[in-house]
Amino acid sequence: MSQKESHLLLPVDSAWLALERPENPMTITVMLRVEGLTEARFREFLKIYWLAWARFRFMPVCRAPGWWWEEDPVFSLHHHLEVVPGEFDHRALQEWVSARLNEPLPDYRPLWKFWLLPDAEGGAALLLRMHHCYADGLSLLGVFERLCPSSPQQAPVLYGAPEQADTGRWSRAANAWLRELIADAPPAPGSAQEGGIPGNGGTPGRNALERATWKSLKLVNELSHFLVEPKDTASSLKPSLLGRRQCRWSPPVSLERFRHIARVTGVTINDVLLSCVASAVRKRLVADDTDMDEAVLHAAVPVDIRSRLPEDIKPEPGTLGNYFGTVFVPLPVDGESSLERLFRIKHETRKLKKSWQPGLSWALTGSASLIPEAWRQPVADLFYRKATAVVSNVPGTRDERYLAGCRILEQMFWVPQAGDIGLGVSIVSYAGQVQFGVVADEAVMAHPERFLEDCLQELDLFPS
Image (cartoon, rainbow, N blue to C red):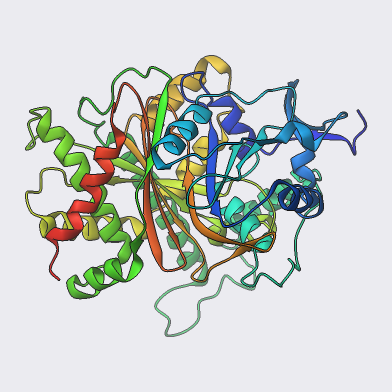
């Protein structure tokens, strides 16, 4: 293919292809409940708006020296949209969605597909599965926000993006970063900067050296803390995976309920949400007769790092790609009261806010496709052995949105769980309501709906 038709994936995108395992595919799943959505409306929507992102016509192909984007020469929307008839009730829909999670996407086409169930009870169900190499959850959320306006009469205004090689921009950003480090070094003897400014307590050169030294020490400290952090306690939540997964989602809960608890206790809404997950995990461990005083468990929490990136590589709004790091939040599963767990989570999240951990984990993940295959598993083990679950918090829009002129009633995301992690918890807010979702390998949970019930029961234990 020509240069215009084929180019290398960025390392942060191809990493998800390198980390993929047959029993744990790196696929994002999105489900929307859309009132009155028909096949004709949705097919037109895809042709005009969705395919305006050129990447959706491309597929990742492995050939030396790495993974390349290549346009599908026989692309047809027919391959990426399936309409499923039938009046699915809630239980049948959950079983059907779980079955799709275990259905591989063909690797000879672009790695995404929609299913539309127009006659499902409670509103049409729209399911999207997409490989993580195309985009992270926030990128996808940005796509849907652009394509789904707040009025049924309003058409999307800004949408789409060309697919083009971006490696040169990353090289220029790396050079700029190197120049910044050099600028932090002390000035050469005899230079105009060598002389000190009276009264400032030191020279600019010495101050620059101190800043550079502090950065180095902080980096060493962050890496050391990351490496010596104990791996999670062996438990029934982290067995050998079977490769068969089930997913469930909760009924919507008013966002105001979480906001009230956060206001009364002096924490954030995210602290309350994570505390609900910690409570459900604790109940599983107690049921397994785990020694709670010695139990160590972490949640891998994705964190958007777009604002932390150098200006030259910050993605433009509406572009696809992977721009998140991961923090490993200790879950206070030994805490016996809801308030104790909540305040300990508040302490941990505040401590991680200034951490370099998201950037370090982003760099480690991005290196997966650049190192020999024999070394990938040790790197992945180092990275993912520190967590038992992935907990993602997807902040949706505050107002209702419309897809192809049809009102979106609910939205749910499930993200993949890399390595040996077999439990994923998704928390999605949309139009003043919150829903919990769970996806679990069958070896981890035979009945994931009970985990969701435990998450919601924690809310009743907080002060009203």
